[in-house]
Length: 136
Image 1 (tube, helix red, strand yellow):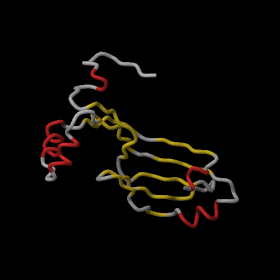
Image 2 (tube, rainbow, N blue to C red):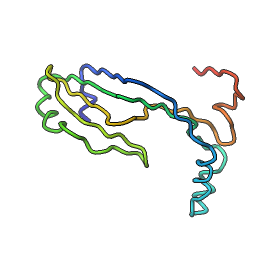
Image 3 (cartoon, one colour):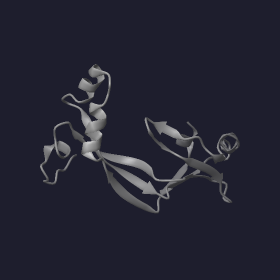
């Protein structure tokens, strides 16, 4: 991918919020899976579930490339980009070249960039029961 070849990368956003997964609706969705084997697998022990996700508003990435590869990148990235998805979640991005000849990617709507996970059967990450937990 071309983005890994950027020599300078700047990321910014206008705001951030944690979106919490509503457990009841999530559980109902899992229970409604028609294939019994898949349903048993996803609801079984030792599974990791998303508890909440970090959403950024006004997400913008500016990339600067070496002049030798800019023509190739300019030919590929300009205007509205197709929605990149993972399951039902994705990002609507546009690409534009700035007056300083840098590629700027802007999200049209909120974009999820991180998440907090927990094991099945636990209320919080690591079963910490509300106590702070440090990793690392």
